[in-house]
Length: 315
Image (cartoon, rainbow, N blue to C red; front, side):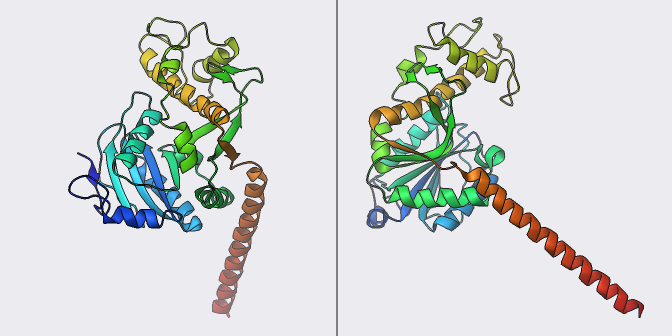
């Protein structure tokens, strides 16, 4: 059974309660965070980083933790209007897990203008610095008040210019460790796993196969996948494919196909995609430089005061 930290939004018959009416009345201010995890190991560090962003955006929020490992440990998230941990579905890793969260929202009659999709690598691998937190907070407020379909997140270019995803030409992709979608965009793009049969059709099933992707897939795209996951140090768990690790890599590459397909779905379905990190590297460098100078100045002042105290004692 899922752990419910607060029952403010649930009535005894499973329908939306009085709290849901409150949420609907304030939906311009409320957002929902769908946090996907494989066990609660990284939960605390990720929650801290999410909290920093929410403190800037000044938004009311509700958090739903989807645990694909199905441990569903109790939640502690300061400031949340409601929080719950529910068991997920790891068939397509985070994408099938997030679909479980979206179905839960719908079944409970919980509505919001914006959903933040976050997985448990957000802070451990990509912790945002101050300038990026400011940008994310800005786009949270922007997208939650926008009627047209909007998705915001980190948009990276395709590794090769002529690379073709099985579902279409691929110019860029959305890094799905963290992204936000407003209600209009979710309506057009959910369920996230609505292309399951298309994805499965391009994956090998025989563990003795030399590649996870079938030969019918674009050779440049297969080259990218093989370089990233089997031939280099691009991914932290990169290793040669063999029958023992075939199922592990099949599931990983399946989720990558979903990740790469999200931008294609948005383009096809009329969802505006905003790159929240565009131009932020320079801003990070400027703020980082100012902060470093401030640290050096305070260290210099501390040293001067200490030396002055020592001189006074000697006199």
